[in-house]
Length: 108
Length: 116
Image 1: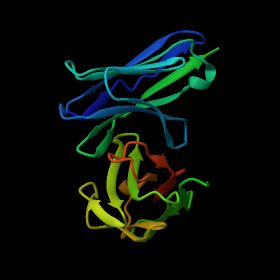
Image 2: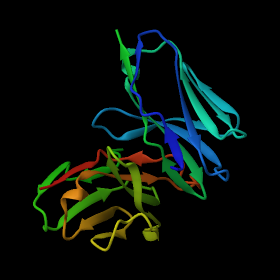
Image 3: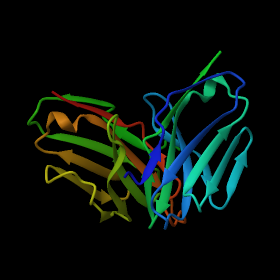
């Protein structure tokens, strides 16, 4: 089993929709979590950090469920510019482990 | 700040040739990471340095891969000899002091390596 698992998608949603991705992790010692965004043929960039139960930043909400060992990312009012791959990342023992990413396609 | 700078952006080489990838981290950052990304395996950590010292190289695939960081502003990843299965995008990333758990990584634009 991979340490960080994500549904690869793609998730195809219309503009304005709400979409949510889940990510499961296997290392119960994971200390913190992150969502990175990667555009096609570009480098990953930090989107959000998730330290305790969750975090909200504008249209984006990240939640952590330690009991079930998953993290979610909710995007409200999707924009065309949200189309990208979203990478779930966990930090355990001072090391970051990346999931395979979930691809989101927002259509007009 | 120019960000993390990698060169070359693209490298096409023939099997058996030596390949050297270069990285200049953001000034003041004290941790440097080399990642490899493929469709099949996603982003994999190859090696990371802290204050120019290699801390964890358990992700380096085999002896054909080596990495150095001779000073705080420069690192290389070398593959010798290269093989077609090494074809991937290689990212360099750095993080700053005080980021005790190396949380926020700043990635370079990557080097697209194709080994024919």
